[in-house]
Length: 208
Length: 208
DNA sequence: TAGATTGTTAATCGATTAACAATC
DNA sequence: TAGATTGTTAATCGATTAACAATC
Image (cartoon, rainbow over all chains, first blue to last red; front, top):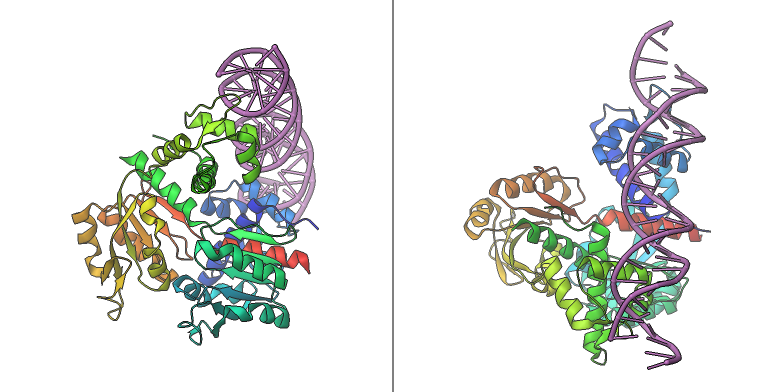
C-alpha cells in the first residue's frame, strides 16, 4: 500500500486548520475553492484536485461543506484512530511534546515516557510518569506501541532508534539533530530544526 | 534581492550535516557527487547542479573538497554572520530552544527571552534571564534584534507577532500551532508540528 | 595512458496553472 | 433564467534525471 504524497498531506493538514477556524467562527457552513485557496496561497484548481483525491464532491454555486471535508480529512489521514506512542528523552522538549494538547486530536495516545537520567525517573510529563530507558522494550511490546518519539541528544539518537525498532515500533518521530538509519519497513519523520535555522539565516543575510 | 529556493536551502543544510560528519571522521578530504548523493538519497546530477549554484567547482577524478564546500555553504546561508534574536514564551519549548547549542553555529545570537507569566520572570533559560513581555519592544529596538522566536500558546501568537513586527524584527520563527499574519516585508518560518503528526498518522493508518 | 568524475545540455517527468464545458 | 462554481482536460512550467563530452 503506497500512501499519499508528502505535499498533499501537508496541504490537507493546512486545509484542516483553516477549516477548523471556519467552523470555530460558526458562520460558515460551506467554502469555495477560491476563498480557501486565497487564504492558503494555493491555486483554486489545486484545491479542487485535492478534494477529488480524497473523494469529496462540491456543489456548483455552493461550494464544499466544511464539516464533510473536515471529517473526510480526519478519516484520510487517520486522525480518527488511536496509535499508542512513547517518548524517549524526557527533557524540556520531551516535556513540551508530552503536554501538547493536540497530540490526541491527531490520533496519537501517549502511553509512556523514558529517560536514562535517574533524576528524571518518576517525574510526570504530560499524563505519564518517566520510566528508566531499560524498560522501553518491554513497554513497547506489552502495549503494542506503534510510534516512538525521539527527543534525546544527537549522540544517543541512533541507539534509541535501535531499541525502539527492535521492540517493534512502526514509525519514529525524530527531533534529535542527527541522521538515524532504521530497517526499511520503519517510517521516519525527521523534525530537523536546522532546516529552519538555515532558511532564517539565509533570509536575514539577504536583508543586510 | 530574491533568495535561494526553499528546496535548495533544505538540501544545502543536508549536505552541510553530512559533510560535518565526514570531517569529524577525519579520513575524508574530498567527496564525489555519487557518494554524497547516495548518502542523502539525491541524484548525483542534482548534487553537481547544487554545487554549481553556490559556485564551488570540483575536480574530475578527485571530487569536491569537504572544507571548501562547508565554508561556502556557511557563507551562502549566512552561518558566518551574527543575528540578534529573542525568544518570546519561556516555557518548556522556549527553554529547549534557548539551550540548543547549535543556535550560535547557525548565526543566531540569543539576546533575551520574555514571558507574560510573573513566575517565570527572572528565571534563566539558556544564557539569558526571562524578562516581562512588556519590555520586548524596547529590547528589540535597543539591541537591533532581527529575529523573533515565538513559543507561546496558539491564542497569543498573533499578538506576540504584532509586538515583534512593530518593534522592527525582520523575521519570525513560529512554533505556535497558529497561522499568523504579518506585514509583507517580514519573513515567517512556520514550524508546524501538526504536519508531522499528519504524516505519521497517515502512515500508521496505511499500516493497519 | 586509461578511467573516474565533473559540468552541462538535452530528455523526461511530474506538478502547477489555465481554461472551459457541465451544473445547479 | 443568469451566473457562480465545480470537475476535468489541456497547456505550461519547473524540477529531476539521463547522457555524454570535457578533463585531470
